[in-house]
Length: 110
Length: 114
Image 1: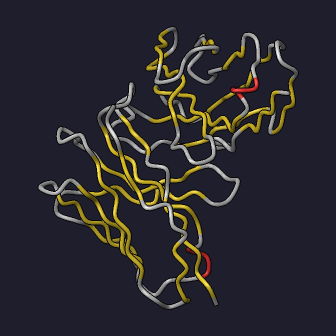
Image 2 (image 1 turned 90 degrees about the horizontal axis):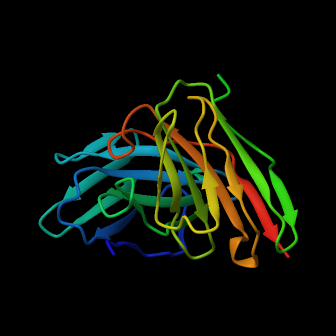
């Protein structure tokens, strides 16, 4: 079974700090990569897609390392509202082509 | 647009009962899918549909049926509920293939089977 592995955390980070977490995947044939955000007892929502060249959206930066088979998410100047679970999603392996990680729980502390 | 809607939000069943979880989307998306989310597990695909009249099994299909008679609706039927089906169920839709496109999730149905 194709796997997507994430550190479940929780990551406790002071407001304003920079935090980064990685996700490793086992399927070398994976073509697309995403980070979803899930708030407590809510549905997942797309945070950003991850492109081969890396991409940035405001305070969020996503990187892909195909050689080592991991993707990363960097959050700068963290806000209290960034507290959530971040799901790594990778194509390949699942019946519909997507495999979800179990999520990394992030807590931003005032 | 309402996006993806799910009913009910909460449900308690007794073992052996059957029920249907409703899912609808108003974005004219071709792809729809059902996931379950259990503590300590990633979302797991139950069934999915690539268009009206076409459905297929996902990773954990046993005990569930689906049909897709219209583009908008994709109900999930529990045939004979078991405690192992206690979970949070999410319906999702995407414009085209889920592999490359954003999935839009409904708010979820929290199901408890006693």
